[in-house]
Image (tube, rainbow, N blue to C red; front, side, top):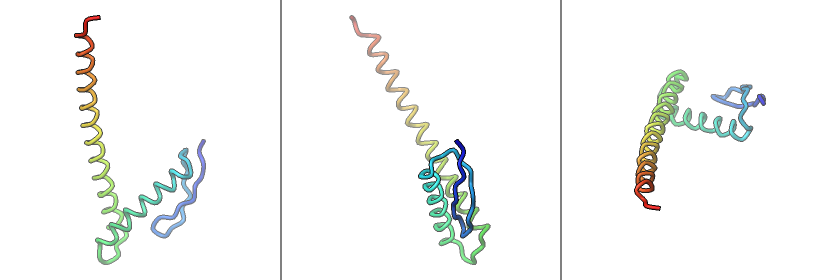
Length: 93
């Protein structure tokens, strides 16, 4: 069920709609604010647009790294399952 949640990002109060739990929305809000704060610490001059772009780039990089790691883990699991199936097929019952 879609619910409306109040969040604060970049000092602005926002209303967002989501099917996620309030706890999950709060975690997303916290992560966004954490990444924005990290980016803001690296940018001089207080250019909000530059801060947002840097935060998005950092999040995108983390997302791509996670996707790559997940693909590698899936490949490893598939190889292990195939090996186990092969061992079972060779068993004499």
